Length: 398
Image: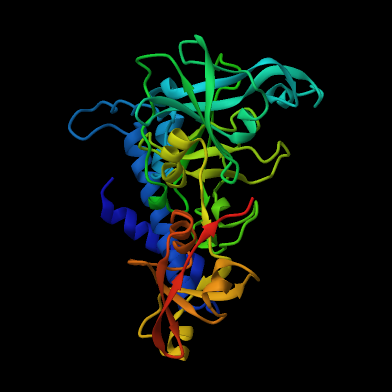
């Protein structure tokens, strides 16, 4: 069937349909006419494809097209949706390990199974993964490593090896373990600062040492904009986690969170097993900042300033005469803190810490990495001009 008769027929049908009501606006009539033409064109295409008539010049009906699989149909309807994560999980499973206790503990991963009491005892503790930092080590959550003094690691080949606790970071809920096993394959670390809301993530776990489990979701929030606290506490700026809708239960807590390139961008943290809760992961860039200290010293010595800060927007910058929006606005100063001793004031805008430009997101991390007791010149914007304030950060109180 040629295109011209189809179009003529569509126009005739649409004219009859729309002609019954002249009260319909012209835009609606044009829409109805377009829909009619589209439907008839689709019907004609189906006739050609399904063999509704002989092929021109052959006298025989054309062969039916191959049926679409569900995966192919999904890609047509939703081109950005992934077809499968099988290859991604397969390529990363070599770096996922199980963490076990030498003797049974209560409230472990075994309690996640339906009908199992919360007090069920089991030797399973959670998940970890292999990293390389001047040797092969295992990263996991601190709350997992703290559950037992006798830790064992079940490697991907199901070989079990004793593990030594090398370092702990209670604030980030991180623990570094070492295993004396050669030729292990660590997972590559990515860059969590590059993550954007909406990207796909895969969370891997293996608490029982028998099968790698996987859950999939997207980045719900990066946490970068929440890093504005420089005061001690469990909920301080260091706990600016990645947020994801991927399911993270107590079994895959401590496991790797990988991106679609197969690189680790976070460490899974289980917050509970109630359906509907959001899940969190420690950004891998925060891990990279402390892993060497954990390996060498067994702990992380952080500095604190004792202020709360907020972002500087264009309106605030214009009000205080700042040439452009930058820095971190001081909104609160803790009594007796290094900031109070240095003479920082509420309303100051911290522009630089030492030689580094800062904002409300980067300042907490930069301060924390400064050795306690090291004098640092801080540039602040005060009274419509720059002022140098010498600050001596102190070790963060526990």
